[in-house]
Structure formats: C-alpha cells, structure tokens
Image (tube, rainbow, N blue to C red; front, side, top):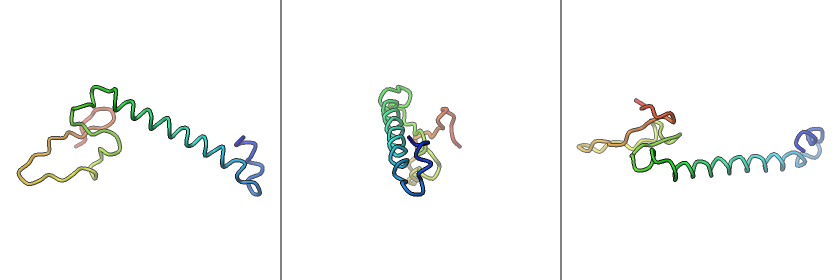
Length: 83
C-alpha cells in the first residue's frame, strides 16, 4: 500500500501516511514489549545495580554526594564497563 500510494503523494498524502504510521507504531510496540520482557526475564541485569541502554550514558548519571561513593557500575549493551 505504501509503494502504491507513492504515486498519489502530492494529492492524496494520507494514502501512504496512515499505513506507514501503522507500521511505525507496530514496530515501536514490539520494541517496547521486547525491552520490557528483557528487563523482567534477564537475571543478569536484575538486582545487579547495572544501568543499561541509552540511559547509561555519562550525562545521565546522578552526581556523587560528597563522602558517599557511587556504587553503580555503568556498562554498555555488550556488558563492557564505560569509563
């Protein structure tokens, strides 16, 4: 449908836009469900104090309070420590 609607984009843009949005939201839903299942079922990441994924970047860490060490290890998706 999307490729067929490409011929009508200048006049009937919705002919391709809505099937494309349906595919987009379907893929987004599967990704979110997969991430949730991994968080629930992965014994490595559960209760280990490890931050994974895009939130594990350096800018998203909370700063250390003076006198209290930061005990969280930040690792990449492959499990390697991020300096």
